[in-house]
Image 1 (cartoon, rainbow, N blue to C red):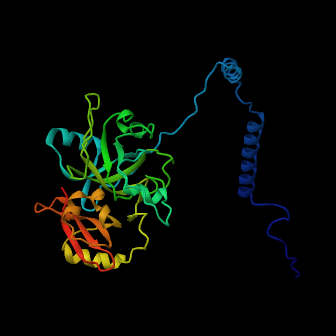
Image 2: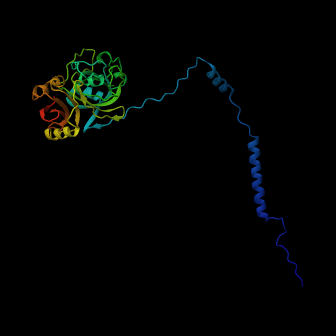
Image 3: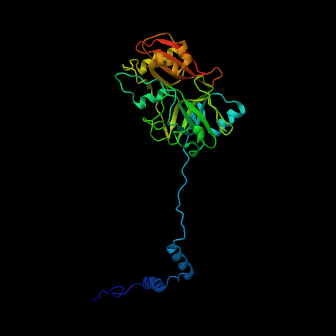
Length: 334
C-alpha cells in the first residue's frame, strides 16, 4: 500500500494564538495613532497672549537684566602661621582691647597715588625710574571692608574718601608692593584690590597723622610690612633697589639667607628687603641707622618674621654690608 505524505498544517496558516496576539497589537497601535493624529492642542488664553504682546511693544515697560551678584573673594584663613582677621574685627580689637603688634588683615587695599618723604633725587649717570624710586617713599593706604570703602580719588588724602569700616595704613620707605597693588608708574590706576596684608601696630617707623572727629576708623600707627595675597594669588616678595646705586648688588639671595639664619636663629621668612647707600638708611629706619657701623659700601636692610617669647608674631630687622655680608646692626621692630 502506498501512503502519500501530507503536511501537518496547510501552508499559509499560523497558529491560532499567535494570530490573535498580532491582531490585538495591531489594533492597539491603530487606536493610539488615531488618537494622536486627532488630538488638537489647547487653545491659547487670549488675555495672556495680549498682555505678553503689550509688554514686548510698550517702551515704558522696563525689564531689568538679571545680573549675578559678584562672588566674595576666598580670602585665606591663615598666613605664615597667623590667623587672618577681617577689617571689622581688627577695628573693634584696636578700639576695645588696644590690639597691638603684628596682625594679618583681609580687606580691600588701595594705595594713594601721591607718595611723601621720598629720598632726594640723585643726579648721575643713571636715570631714576618711577618704579624703582617709589618704594623709597612713604605712601598712605586704606584697607576697607568693602571695595566701595577703599575706592576714591587717589590724588587726595585717603581720609577724604575712605568710607565704612576701614584702617588707615602706611607703607614705609624701603618696602616694595606687588605691581597689582602699586603699578610701576605713579599715574596708573588705583583700584581697590582684595588682599591679605601683614601689618604692625605701633611700629616706630610709622608717622602720626591727624584724626579728626569725623574720621571714625583712623588708627594712624598701622604699618604695612608685606602684601602676602592679592586678587586670588599668593604674591612674591620684591626687593627694593635704590636708583642712585651705580653698581649692582653683589650679595646673593642664598648668601643673605645663610647670614640671616646665623644672625637671627629661628627667624622666619623675609618680609621686606632693600639695598641702598648707607647714608640713606636714616630715611628707611632711623633707629637702625643710629646703630649701624660706618661703611662706605651699600647696605641691605631686611625685615624678618620672628616670634615673641609668648609665641606671638613679631618683626626683627637686620642690616648687612653688601659684598662682604658683614652684620652691621640688628634689632627688634617696635
